[in-house]
Image (cartoon, rainbow, N blue to C red):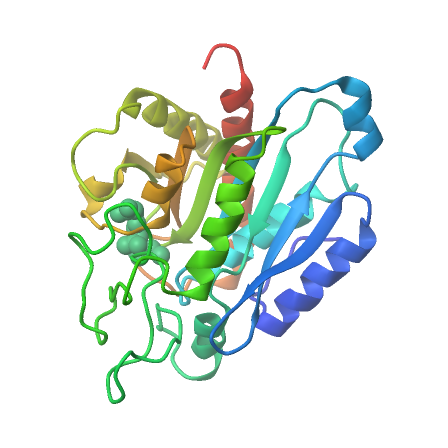
Length: 310
Ligand code: 0X9
Ligand code: ZN
């Protein structure tokens, strides 16, 4: 099964995910964790080691990672990258070589917005929820709809703005679904949720919390170290420069998923802005390249997060 070198429609993504789950019934589980305003499914894909294998090893709390893509509709390379990561990791269904991670993927967080970028407006960012008042504008920015710090700097109460935050924290089915899944994993005593990655574009950045303030996060040193581990491995693949920095240094924005993840708490939290540095329209011939370098970064970060010397 080769990597995907094209951008897929939402329906193609659904087929792709169903096919993946059917191929590896023991290890890959596909579940619907919510529905968007337009009735599209919001999917969670869980990749686990085989059950008897885990029982044999007495693994103790197993490390877990949560990855999302497509919070912003026009950032097509984000779901494309996460789907290729998923494909790569399930090549042989699950590799039972260690007390392995439990992997959670929400590769398409904003199906309504994504469909809209295929049919109506390639540069749509938000979801497609109707406005609270008739005659206002559609859509909430799914990266301004989270707690803590919802409603603060870098978000807007104007429904027509790109950074409209919604009526309340988690007013949207997409953010509610993701929050519920992340909270459930974090509270599962058999798991140790260590890593959160949220894929966006563009800019070639590895951003760590906080994003709502330029105050330093209490574990800033760990966050920066993990970011550098990701970036160094990434750079070794195609020598493309990405920059590791605190999210609020780019611009402060409150109500984003990364600050929620960090508050859960999750130790290693990053919003990755993928290729390139100019445009949301990333040529198809860079899909595989973007995946390759970020897969290396991701694998290095997972190793780092569970190593003794982190
Ligand atoms: O503004 C955003 O939501 C992200 N950039 S994007 O161009 N993909 O829209 C950056 C979010 C960084 N995190 C926080 N500021 N919390
Ligand atoms: Zn984005």
